[in-house]
Every structure is written in C-alpha cells, then in structure tokens.
Length: 95
Image (cartoon, rainbow, N blue to C red; front, side, top):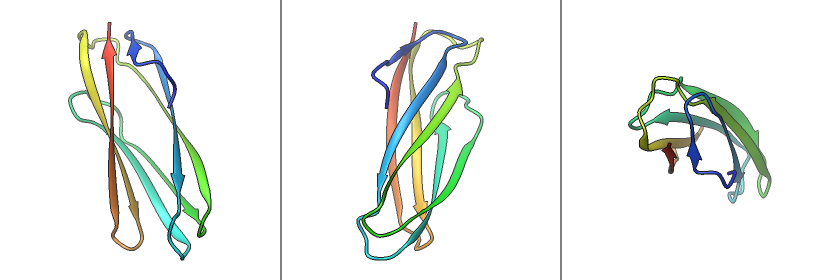
C-alpha cells in the first residue's frame, strides 16, 4: 500500500497489495474491495498463483466528491477456489 492515509474528495487512491501462495497447489484467487462506511464501486479482480508464487495487485479508486471529512474503512476480501477466505482492512482519513 502507499504511505498516504489522508485524502481529499476527488483524490485517486492507489493500493498495492502483495499476495503470496503459501500452499502446495495452484490457486485461482478473487480479490474484492468494498467500502465499509463509504460507497466505492465494487472492485473485483481474479487471477491465479502457483505454489510459492507471489503477486502485487494494484487497486485504485477515486474518493467521491460529496464525501464528508472523517475516517473511512475499506474491506479487502481474498477468496480462492477451495472456499478459503481472508479479510484485511484499510483505514484512511478524508480531510
């Protein structure tokens, strides 16, 4: 992820997410981004990783113009074809 955590309405947010396959089989993964307390259009990306392979996935979105100042949370969901699920959160501030 980038090191900026404060944004203004209209700013472009770019997140770089490193994903590792620590398993022993090739996996088909789906990365989904959604806002917890902010509307962000649904971002979905599907890709595959072999065992011990890693990938940097770029996720970007624009902060809505009509957003109020305050703290907001994004939820990142990673699912695989084996019904495993991982969740991470990214908190940022609108100034």
